[in-house]
Amino acid sequence: MTKRYVSLPDEAEAGMREFIEAVDRRLSGDEDTCSVVEDVLIDLSGDREAYERWQNGEEVSPATQVRLQSYDPCNTTLESEYYAEKDEETYRRSKHLQWLWRQFDSLPIADNVEFALRFRGMLADHLFEECGENCRFFKGITFTYGHNITIGDNTIVHDDVHLDDRGKLTIGDRVSISDGVHIYSHDHDVVDQTEVRNFHTIVEDDVRLTYDSMVRAGNKVGENAIVGARGVVQHDIPAHHIAVGMPAKSVKIKPGWESVATPIDEAGVNRQDERHLPYDLPEEFEVFDEFDRDLQSPN
Image (tube, rainbow, N blue to C red; front, side, top):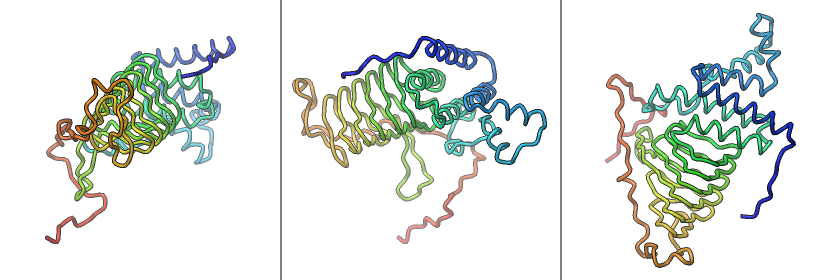
């Protein structure tokens, strides 16, 4: 890939490094994560003066109070917080870090690419189950939890990607994930939408998931494979294959890999059930249908 080397002025570089290292130290220490996130967002938003006035009992508008309260992730909720099967203890910290990631992306400073890539990379080290070296995360990336994601070295995730780790998500080394890609690890029953099944979804080393493609839950995209733009992966894609379409089908083997790749006519195997991740809900958990539907079949 042809890229130019870009550097910041020395003063900007030093200030950026100092700030990111300070946040990293605080997140690595014994300090309450909620407090760290609140402090960082207040300062990055330039709202410290208003926050101090509010804390000192001075009158602020209701809108200002809501904004200031929302810097503290303990005063917020995320969609994944409502999921029944989540691990409450693990989720508490990952929610706070995910809130910091999302709110950072909403700030103008998130368009400073050099700063934003390093800041998100530092957050990924704390949020993900495991994150390799030299990964690059661009703007608008979302997660379900974050703590069920493992990513290898030198992987790049572009704008507006959704990494669903309601189940488990493993992404290898040197993977390229283009704008608008969605990778899922959970699915819903076709009759009862409230019945959720979680899976382990795998994207192996050197894979390219191109623009707006989707990997459905429990599938594996094999090493060095390519999924074409807007392709929908509904079964395993063998290593070194090029797959396109809805659903994505193998149409070609990468030149030079023919001798080691699975033949085209043997592709298309669905192994989703092998990667199913069962879970248990507490006995006292109240199950309900948020849509309040009658799911009785006429048959």
